[in-house]
Length: 433
Image (tube, rainbow, N blue to C red; front, side, top):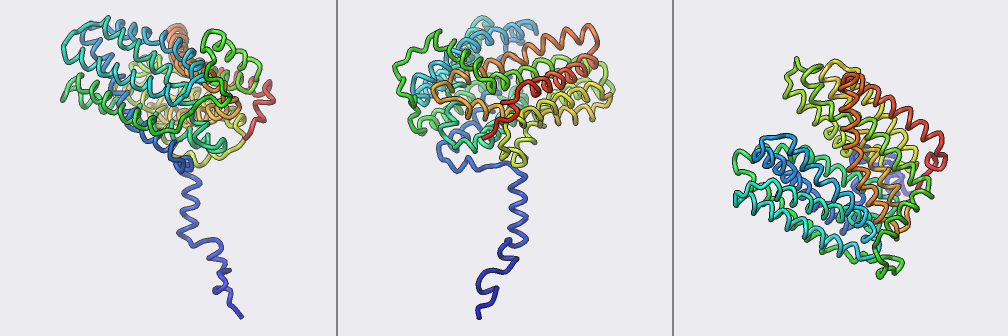
């Protein structure tokens, strides 16, 4: 008679040894890297690692150079606003273009445009032109290229990985982006005194070659409906808005983001809180910790994305994440300790990562391919515009009612509004893949 062990039916073998079980538990908890099995996505993701850090070098260098020239923070604000209008316009138009041309070609052209703009940033800085007007023009051009690139890039993910892997793919992309928001500014701060601003611009231009190479290696991504000759005009942009208005799942997804960001993003109050509530810990240290806490939480959420990225009830996950964000922000407003404040903001960062992963997956999976570019264009506008509206709202409320009251009220308003959306949006609550 053949023994149990000879047949391979030993219970320990069937379940795997202790080491295998530990690795299985580890895989369930840590980041789901399944989408990296797909070579095109892996190339695109790998290029994002370096280009995100590079873009942050320019994001720090531009306001630093403007402040050095003018000595005015107001001009830094004007420059930021100068980049918003072209970002909004070209994101909406770029979404329509992305639905009518090969998205790979569009990404090649726009990435090349961003790289050339970075080279021009380097040239003007190296030449010592010290022109605020030129910097603002270059920033507007760069943001225009970015606005056109973002919808095509994001809409392409649904063609590179299966629908069931979209949450994991978005978690991988967002973790890299959030890490860049931490590492890039720190690296820029360390490099500026050593190598100066021109080198930062040049490094950004060079690393953009990695993005161009990764996109060049992608397969063609033409419109699936054969609508390559479709005109990408105002009518197509408005068709995207009508598409959203008639599909409650998409509409509620955008509303969830607007609610979370406009009512619950208190970054405009960080300087006031650092100089008042958290002054005993040191104003500069407190300010840096407050700004870093949300991105750090988002990165931690991404590293632990195996705990949630396989969930199929995408709508329910968005609702739970936004409510958690609101509660964490309200708790931050109530906290008098800097360390508890950082903890609550980090929890909010984790919730923001979860919300972003599933909102992005909904916008990619619940949309036909001929509309994905336009929907992602609207998404880019919402992501860019929401925090700026929040700055205005929280800054005004903080001046009138006090910073902690404004933060706490904003967080609670997020919870109430999101629960209202959940009650009204039956299809959104039940959406799954």
